[in-house]
Length: 428
Image (cartoon, rainbow, N blue to C red; front, side, top):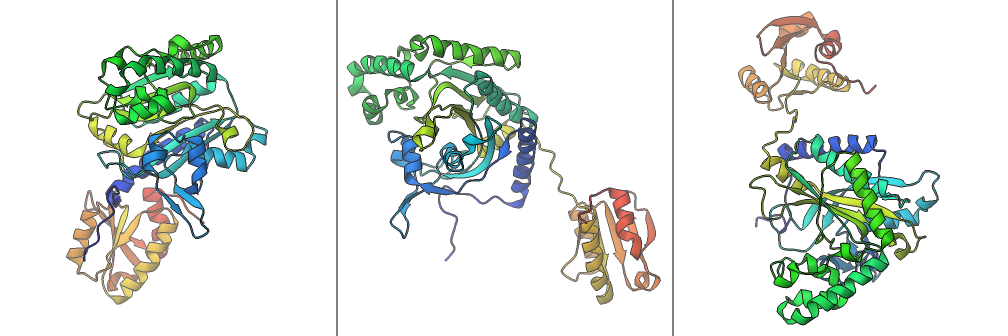
């Protein structure tokens, strides 16, 4: 019986993983420039981590988590998002006591959500994220947004739209929640079942509903910006001023909310405006989450971050017809003829690889013509030919594939010679 991959998961084959590796290298380089350091947390956490941080009323907790009991009867959940685990690690390892603050972290995580699979949204998904913990300066909000934009721009994306909003502090949010309840209650029976529940538990999330988005009450819903107190309004103004200084264009969207309970103050999304990208245009979402460290048992430390879907990033690159400069060719291909030449070729390959040269050979004992065809298929720049005559003379023939020119090089010198021709870095 043939067994396929589980629904909502995909295999990433070598021609795809090369693109993923390139994207990750570009992002990692930018993180180093911005002084964000990598953190790696477990793939699963105690379920309470997500219940207390993401929120009991969210779709993630109520509908989408992969939760199970382990053999010790502990409730365990495969991580559905990245921030909660990073903040848990921050608290557990007392990173709030480090001399340099804020602590600036990034991660590449595999996430798991039980939802209907669709293009760019699978049950196993991949996310790049950053978290800056330890500062309530609006400048760090702008820096995090700037890093997100820099990642997309470094990969060549141009059809981008940055949308920002303020969710205010706790006082402002409560005032807005009260206004939302008063606004939607008269039409509660016209809303979907989820929104009827949300109106009682977390009315802010009604604004994020895709089913009721065209309801008339949505268009006239009170804006959070009308309920920002003086402190929250000043904070949002500073974030916008910093973005202006960074020459980052943005649009203020009063209806923008984030689907996780821990957000407050700055909220933002980056969307693709590329033609043909699809109905769901969001590439990235993030914001500030003051209070989350305290919720997970630590001191009250402010934080801000974002999560970027790698699958959706690759979709955006495809929509804008951007070809990543992925190198797939081989520097050298060794053609060996005869048992002794085959044995010698193994040592030559190993030495050249240590010198940083990308080299391969035939492993099917094929004739010379078939081996040359193999060299063509991998687009080798040079072919090294080794037979009985060359072994006897202590030489190897180096053929430049582009011109057909050939020269004989001493076997003992071939690794250093090819390194001088191609370049490379030694691991010795």
